[in-house]
Image 1 (cartoon, rainbow, N blue to C red):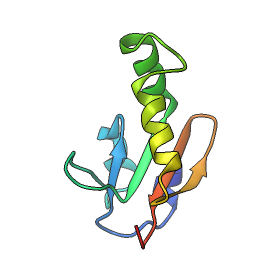
Image 2: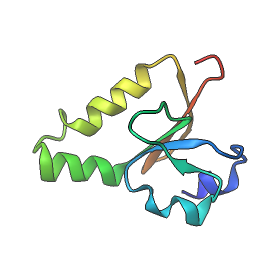
Image 3: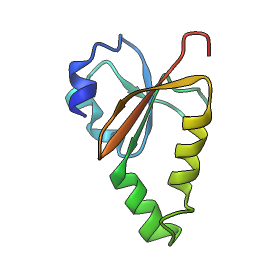
Length: 96
């Protein structure tokens, strides 16, 4: 979240991810993406991973979070712009 607050990502960008209700506290110019639009940014947090793995899918290796993570990671339209032990952030390429 600190990365999103300090990096100038432009106004009106959309963000996809889990637990986005806190985003406005860090960067008021980002908006949660609707399910029908392609997000400008994708944020994957470890809290979303553990929620999916432990509560819903009961698997640390094959769950909805890891499937979404692999999809974004392998999508040529997105480039990873930040990574840490707790989060990954991808940005949609201008040509994508």
